[in-house]
Image (tube, rainbow, N blue to C red):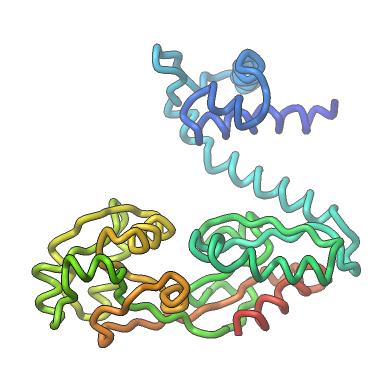
Length: 290
C-alpha cells in the first residue's frame, strides 16, 4: 500500500475517534473491528512519537497534543476529499462528484427535491450533501458549492444572490387552542411559550438585530434548526420558521408584524468555475432558488 495512503487511513481513525468520542463508535462508523481501530491509533502514535489519547475505563481521552492536531487533520481530510472529487470526472464533462454544503433545514426540506430533478437530467452526476454553516468550508475545499444566508466576503469565492428567505413566528392550530396566540409582542415576550436555542446565541443576536426583546418563557431548547422546526410542527410552542414551510406543515402565523428576511446566496470557489459539473450544479441551484 502507498505509504501516504496508509498514513491517511491512520489519521482517518484518529479523526473518527475524536468526533465519536469512543473507539467502538469510531470502529462501527468506519466499518472496521475495534481491535483494528486500536492498532491503527497505536500505529499513528508510534509514527508521531507522542500519545494522542490516554486510556481510561470510559475509553480513550484525547491528550492536549491529540486535541491540537484536530484542525490539521480536518484540513487534510478536506484536501483529500477535494482531490478525489476532482478526479471523479473529466473537467469538461457532466459526470463526477459535486459536494454541496447547506444548513440542516435546507438539507432535509429543500435540497433533496431540487437535486432529484438535476440527477434525472444528468444521470452521470453524483451529489454529496454536507450539513454545515461554517464559512470556511469552501475555502478549505470541504465542499464545492454552498447555500448561505449571509453574503460571502472572501475574494476567492463566486456568489450569486437568489430569492431572499422570509421568517416569521409560527405554531400549530392545536397548540393555539390550548395557548391562544398573543395579541401583542409584549404579551408574547412575557407569556409566549417559545422554542429557542440551547447553547448557541443565534436567536439572541437575531432578536437584538431586529431591536426586539427575547421571549422569557422558553419551553424547548435545541441548537438544531431541524429539531426546532420539528418541535413547532409537534405543537411544543411558538417558534421561528421559514415562511415556505408553514403551509405544507399546516402552521399558523403568530404576530404577522414580526417578520424577517435574510439574503440567500449560492457560492462556489473561483478555482472550480471551469469545471463543467460544478458550474452546472451552481447554475441549476441559482435558477431553482432564484
